[in-house]
Amino acid sequence: MSCLARRMILVAAVTLPVTSVFAQGLTTDVLDRAPLADAARAGDIKTLRGLLLAGQQPNGLDLYKVPAIVLAAQGGHATAIDLLLQYGGRTDLRDPEGNTALIHSAQRGHDAAVEALIRGKANVNLEGTQGITPLMVAAQRGQTIVVTQLLKAGADWKREDFTGRTALRYAEENARSNVATLLRRAASRN
Image 1 (cartoon, rainbow, N blue to C red):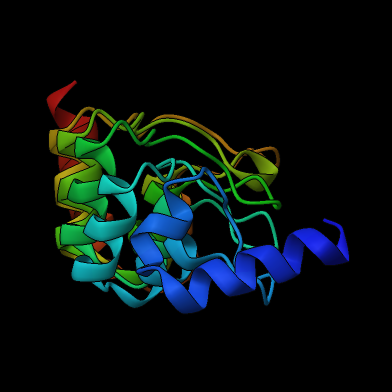
Image 2: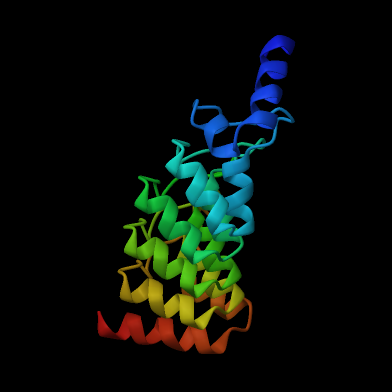
């Protein structure tokens, strides 16, 4: 962006409400911040709604190329996820490492965010880095509620990562006995 363009945006930012500046389709402000991504990261629903109403794209990225929905999921901000999806956000966008919002929520045990992503039709079996699925990371971390949600939504407990480990093996290797029991029950039903 040219220096003149930055100055023009700065003048507009000073004289117009933030939603008017971003209605022009700009994804970064004069300081090269990504307000939509920042609002999603913080779970700031009021700002997020204003930016979306002003025409910001719900699939916006922060300066590190992390999608807004992933940022919301990392913080467990289910309402922000719902809002992004309401405006056409996509659930299965990946961060630069290849992980989805569902993987991040599952890993952190953000069950409300996991539920919002499942409602939004996130692929519960979509692999991230090293072939790891949301179920595997939830099992590894002992996220019992999330494991239950993922199994109920159709997560494949038989799937293996690139090293041949399943969610059950992740649970066993990390002494997550409650999760291992859930996964064994799922296996016995099939």
